Length: 223
Image (cartoon, rainbow, N blue to C red):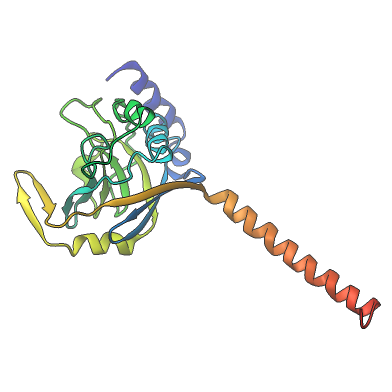
């Protein structure tokens, strides 16, 4: 491992509960052929990977990319943003810049591939070869622990994952692939905390408006 990875591991081990539990306020939403999937990243567990995936999503780099792999009970995996796009849908300079970046392996023992919805970074044989392809776990996969970066989890859209698993598949080498294309038609990032705060303040304003209208009616009957 590179020194930076040792540093990340040691920092996480000092406070593993905090590192494992905090979700980002930002949510990534993929609007797919079979419905939406909402995801949050783990900023303390995998800070480099989390920032990288969020940046790609904010740039719209996943738009038109497909899930090339759907292995029921195991993983649904996105294609690389550079090579997994619909024909004729290219990348702009910023998308290409970030789509070509590598991210290092970031792992801590306390954060495991232990449930449906975990986000796990794809890579080649080199542990530091992650780019943009990642898997959504469809079931526990303990053999991936400490080998692949866990950087977040699905927060909404589990019914969409179930629909993925209903698609007819074929085996191609080690991969189980859907026979029909599962496309990410569009994606966006929003602030969950901001939306909740906005909804709270809107509710307060609506309540105050009704109260003021009631007082106005009581003091100025017929107005």
